[in-house]
Image (tube, rainbow, N blue to C red; front, side, top):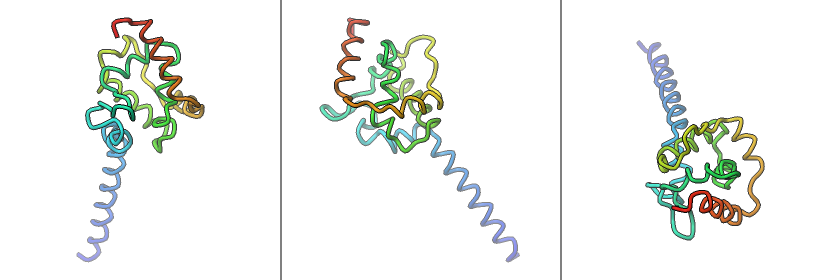
Length: 143
């Protein structure tokens, strides 16, 4: 029976490692670990510090440069997440916090796109955001 103990322990460790890997690949958990600190548990942001995702994030997809902006903001571009997990997180954020604003036919982010765009970080995040918000207001004056 003492020979079976190391095998059972090894199997238990393997299951735990696989479970941990699966948990790390969950966009909800990635949000908690990577975004929640600034953007809050409900994506509401913090006035003057971090913008709200709620009802806002999908609006960026309606104007030129907005899609790329979401990848290139420091939180995404400099995240420790790999390109595939960052793409999954961006897709989850859009559908979790801004589903009504996501344009019909939205092609989900993928690892290749994230990898290509995140290596061109924004120099002036606030100016880029202001320009995009102005374009959004022209595109959809109701918002």
